[in-house]
Image (tube, rainbow, N blue to C red; front, side):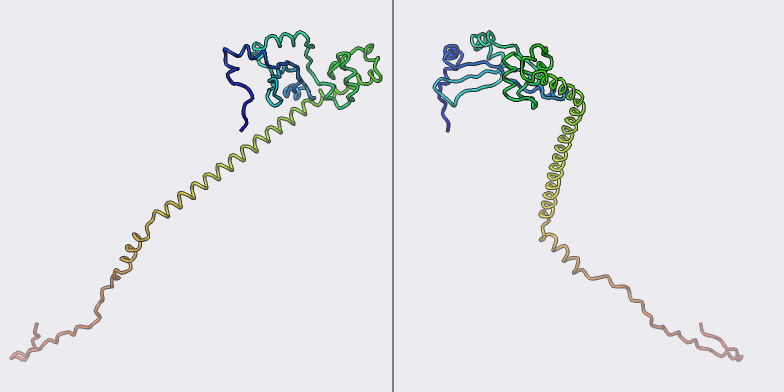
Length: 245
């Protein structure tokens, strides 16, 4: 386990002011890409951002470096005032160091006369640029590059929007697959629980009683012929035959 190399009580409100004076604090400028401006311009656009670097004396592994907040500027007011006193004017645009058409040595030469971005190079006066070997040619390249970037900006924005859309669709598809997978898993568990809830011992006797019950026999219809009774005939005295009823 890593152990802190400083006393946390030093940063409490009552002790912070005194302890802050022992810290190594430095404000500086760091260019950061402005994503929205890059898409609108069709070329890398950077903006100078104020950073603060805070280190503890005697420790090489402890410290932070991040964009400076208003709280940092107020907390280290003396350091920030000294930084502002020697700070150069911030510049926005495409740094020459990010421009693929220029060498590192030429970047250093132009930086010496405060030309640090492609925009500044394109807008520089010929009387100043002509002092550099190939300076006028580099200025024209800067102008042409900015014009091409402006023409391609709408296409780059559309491409970026389509890429973002495809990423959202892919993300939604993965979410739907996961939802369907979870739903199918739940249905399988419920079906298994339902089948398991049926007790075979309760079902077996019922089936057995149904099988043991005798079938209903059809009523036998007798086909025997009942003989008819013969009627006797009587003869009257006058010779007339009389049938018995």
